[in-house]
Length: 457
Image (tube, rainbow, N blue to C red; front, top):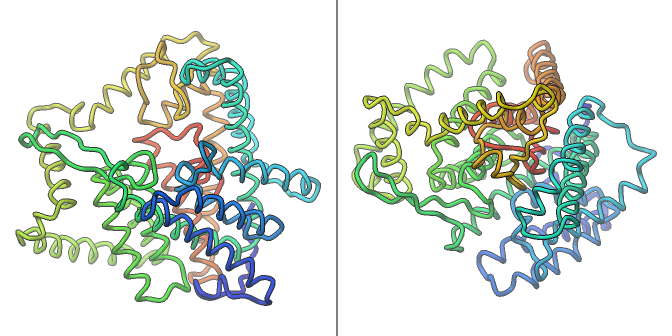
């Protein structure tokens, strides 16, 4: 279930440093794949060319471990890299299926996550297809294809992470590529005007705030991805200090451009959790100092008119002022952007189910499709979403293993002397799980595979 304790490289450069000419060739082709992800934003007319080139690089890396490193790129770019109407990711997923069929007897599975996979498979086969077909205004066959794609995607995410986590060296490269994917998403968002949305803010006067979500489909999702990129840039060893500072600044800018208050809150919690994991007993004093210094710096910055007038800062200020205006009026529903109202409706829908429905679920309120006859919109809470979709039994089968693995890792971390080998990548594992657990209180996760990567990691 965990990684080996060996790693051959000590830097982001050495992670891709060749040991021989053949490995150098594979690494170069992977870097070309990353560069291809930068093209759709900057030169959209060349998207098909870049996608074909990326697919060629994937084929070249088919028998190399770099093949598994495309997952963190596709976590951002799966809907951007297209050949006609076909995502390169979908072709990659079929290739991955073939690759694992040939290796199936050599795999050692992480049994803790089998219950979650089983629940999602049942839901995708029996609950999702009819609703998916209606959602896509297509035939039942199309609905079953959607369900099968979900099964393939979830299964591949599990298997690929299993392979990646076998080697600390490979997992470190996986995390580096996750940062690279964040850069590609940010560049796509900066050059493409179609990946932002304007929201009207009325609580603090009539204003419009622009929210940029890059290559991702939602500002809140983008915010949590970029937040983990901030933590990766800080936590991972081997990244030169100057590059660390540059990456942190870039990802902070990207988070501010999402104007996601949820993302800022989760980034704050991730930062506190990281300090606790990294510095242990000293974290009490460090957190106090960081909070005090951060408050002083933020106060000074906000006192500068030019800083307050920056679009990304002004948008956040407007959103915060709007939220604060609801507190004296007792409008908790508006304070949570109507989430509390949705949660109440979700609980009511769950209570109205039969005993059997409460136990095994069967509702379709997913990122892939929503049965609007049962529930009007996304739940914005993965725990309630899980209850509706999978029932009490399914929810227990999904979350109990997650909590068990998470607390096992915590206990092992604090029972081991600080500074142990590969401590940074172990901490990143816990940060991904922590993000899944905490961020799940404000957004939907199921049954989208990139967010399940947080679960399986």
